[in-house]
Length: 64
Image (cartoon, rainbow, N blue to C red; front, side, top):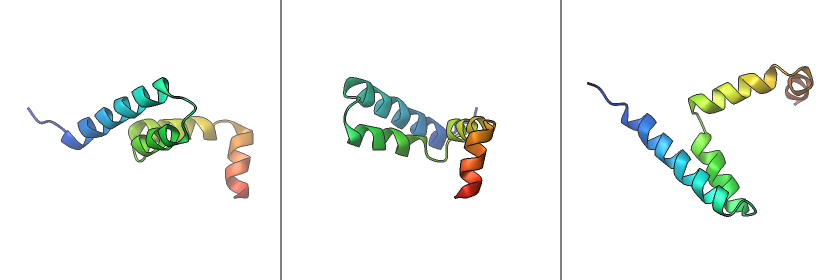
């Protein structure tokens, strides 16, 4: 049985940063931790695809 340790570690970071964010949602540091834990993850790719399905969001991306 193979374990993808990098994915598991990223998942643990995501859960930890989410817990910190839920405890203190007004902390900008927790927002950045949450964003960093999502970087290059399957969830971030799915969120990006979902946002681009919205024509107004796709237009914003094309502008920049």
